[in-house]
Structure formats: C-alpha cells, structure tokens
Length: 212
Ligand code: PCA
Image (cartoon, rainbow, N blue to C red; front, side, top):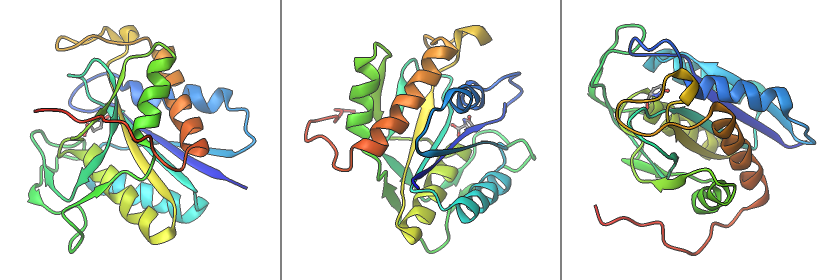
C-alpha cells in the first residue's frame, strides 16, 4: 500500500490563520485513495516541527512526504527545489526560539534537492489555472528546516520528499505584499501535487531556471 504524508503548519508570527494547515485539512476530507493519505498540522517551532515530522515518518513509513507552509510575500504556489542545511530565524518561532546560523542536521550536507518532480508539479498546477512556479529558496525559517529534515529522513528510508509554499488565502484577508488565492484553489494545488508526485518519477526536462 502506497502511503503519502502531507503536512501543513499552524499560524505563526502573530497571524490568526495559516492557509497551509487549512488546505491540508480540505485535501484530507475529500481524499478518495486508493493510496493512504496521512495528514498533520505541524507546530511552528524549530524543535517541535522537526520532531513531529520525524515521528510521523517513523510511524507511517510514507513513500511520499509533501510538507507545505505559508509564504505570505508570494502570490503563486511555490514548488521548492532546494532545502539548505541552515537555520537563520528573522523572527522567533512559536516557542520563542530564534536560532541564528545553526545547521538543520549537524554533519549533514550543505543542501538537498527535492526528490519529488518539482517541474511536473508546477506545470500540472498551472495547467489547472492556479499560478505556480518552481522556487529555488524555501528561506531559512521553520519551513526550510522541515523540508531539510524531510529530505534527510526520506534519504535514509528510500522515500521521496518535497515542499510547497502557498500564498495567503483570500478568505484570510489576503496579503499586503502579494496577490492571494482562494483556499479551495490552494487545496486543489496540493492535491494535484500529491497526484503528480505519485504518477511521475522522472521530472520534466524543461527549464525552470531564473536569472536572479
Ligand atoms: N511558513 C513559515 C513557517 C511556517 C509557515 O507556514 C516558513 O516559511 O518558514
């Protein structure tokens, strides 16, 4: 039986909502299988999020791990390609921790590439009319830490892993920095990402590069 672990996050930074956690709940409610979908909403704490993800991976042995979080300054679904082995927090996490220049996994490599087909995922989401692009930075906060941890665990266990940043949902009042999406579209994008990850094992040979 194929198992997918799909995670979102609780609110952080004083915000009242986090569209990633809510969208994951919508995907779970309408998932029709046949694969087993495990979902969770992670705490926005460096220690708690990585520990919970590691626990979930040990408990369910997922074949595919897709973690998601909010990037409130972006207007598109960002399919992350690179996790860096670095915690450098611009704001405290929900437990008040603010690590600066600490590795995500001590002794690990400088970075990991996502092992989900990021270009195929971005293409399939865009083909459904939802703006989406490959991104080359997941930042240095809790999302990047969970992304790096997921790839580390997946590598040890022969699973595949990736991360998607979502914009603000219009229902939450949108964003001052970027355009927002409907929560239903964010959930559809995540569901497409899961389906594409299950179907596609070799990514598209097309460019998703940027000049800056
Ligand atoms: N976004 C933050 C952490 C939790 C979330 O949803 C980030 O991008 O690191």
